[in-house]
Image (cartoon, rainbow, N blue to C red; front, side, top):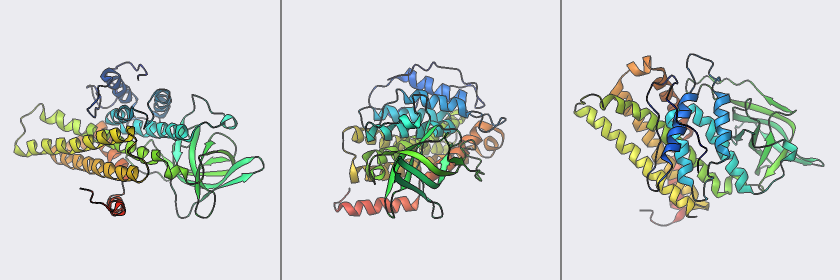
Length: 374
């Protein structure tokens, strides 16, 4: 499964070496395709000397292009999907942050089954996001009218809303019920509000509120389906594949240092610690891909798997960040723009993991099963 992206020499701000494929192991893959995908992501990487959002048109083009051929999760090629995401993330996390939600949105729509999007002016060139976050002081309501569903209210944390054409958005249909809807973001009634995005990491991926005022929407699945579907867990693991790729990108800077020098015992320890962390994450993702494609990651089993994999990958990313920081010291963070941005991007991205709270949710899920997990 290939989109024929030609290999390119790296000419972004990150250096002269190729980015290279990120493989999970197991089945044979199209290594040349993944190498070319990494090269293209590097070429699209934001230039720290330019406007932080200047890379977005090219990154969105890549997302749309990949959306035409990237395999959806759960249909036999989940490993390849996650390798694509990890390869892009190792090259540049900002580019991956554009691609991942577009592919996730397409997977959601595919899982929901055939729908009529003619009212949304959607086509193969549409770019999609997924807006499912909630905030205690903001609420988006969905109401069924004589002319169809309409959305009213404010949705928080809508990444790239000003640049996307469409989105899958969750909205309240009652006091305790939520439902997913497909919406057009470039029509009347949609107001992308200025946010206060101040992050140095993912600086070009501004995330802020969007107000909807009577905006037409097409339901995607019934009430509660968005969270209950097996693909919700699979999408969460796909995000972990991006974290893994980002950690590989940071780790490659450590390899660059020690593969051309003679590390002492501390350096050898740092290299070994990084390899062990990445190996644990890689094995978790590979096993998860197998279980998803085998139909063994639905319902509570899928949720449990997602908790486990995200915990392993998040811990690996944090270990890589720590060991590489200790090994390289301040100079690369101060003088190497690509490395400094890669570290800042990963530090922010991996905070989508809720640390102790997600580990507590994992513990609760284990107890709910009622059987010894080990």
